[in-house]
Amino acid sequence: MIRKGKGIGCMWYPIGFTVAANPSAATVKVNEDGTATLLTGTVETGQGSLTVLGQIAAEELGISTEDVHVVSADTDATPMDTGAIASRTTYVTGNAIKLAAEKAKEILFEVAAPMLNVKPSQLEAADRKVQVKGFPQRFLPIDEVALQAQFVQGQPPIGSASYNPPTVDMDPETGQGKPFSTYVYATQIAEVEVDDETGDVNVTYMAAAHDCGTAINPMLVEGQIQGGISMGIGFALQEEMLFDEKGVQINPNLTNYIMPTSLDMPDIDVDIVENFDPTGPFGAKGVGEPTAVPTAAAICNAIYDAVGVRITSLPATAEKVLALIKEKNEKDIKQLSPAE
Image (cartoon, rainbow, N blue to C red; front, side):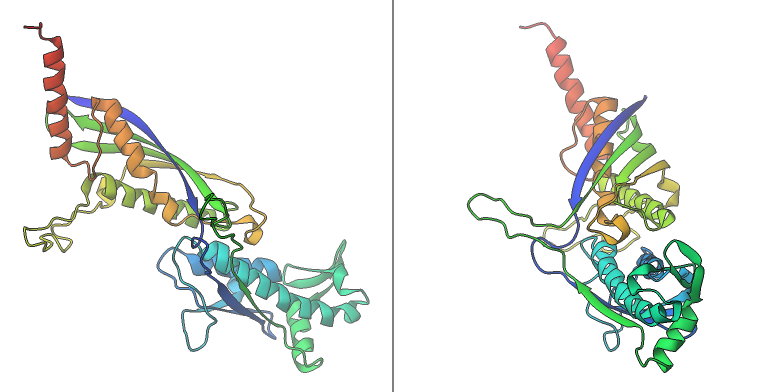
């Protein structure tokens, strides 16, 4: 018989390294045609980070994302970056890029201020223009200001900056401290169908609500959440490393190490919870690894809701689930039998 169940998994997750320094550096150069070049040492691994980092630079400079050329992961040319790890790229590298772009923008303002007969503090950058706050009709195109800065003032609009999340060492006696600068939070709900005759588990639906600060690129955030759920389903139900008696892995390739495919994915509803973090770039925190954290817990809780057995080791293969169902049924029969 197919039995249905629902389960919830919740999590909190830190952004960046635990107390240890994990800085990022960036350089932003505004070109004479109004475009910008961003140098960052971080690596794009398919998560869309370079798009987001380009958006952060563009927002700070008041230009389009299309105007930002990102140069990344070339250790001969780009500044140091700790790495695309610990769900830190948007928060740490993004902060470094925002600071670098801000410095380049300050040079533009210093050059544009006398041209507009105002103070630099009275200027803002928007819509590819340097304009007077409150009087957008008084403006100069950014390309014109950059050209003036480069070839007339001799002050190229280039900014470099680094960012390292502020933390506090843990007290060895009290355990008190601040090991991370910020945290993200999430809740996922799973609906499953369990065949109580075979132990087979099918995830039919997932709902995921994630707080990642401000979503710089909501579509990429949703994609990362869906990808994390895919990894979580594999962790919960399929992926298992098997070894022989000598400790040699017997399923070392994708023909016998089972992973979810698109056909194994359920319907997914994603809710991005906007929660502005004042320490992040434009309020952003991160979304990477946390997307896979609550999935397995939600699925295992749904299995318990469906057939009343608690999974304590992953993956929850059909063999494990069926064995637990049989064990539960035997206990139930003994409890119902009259005492001898």
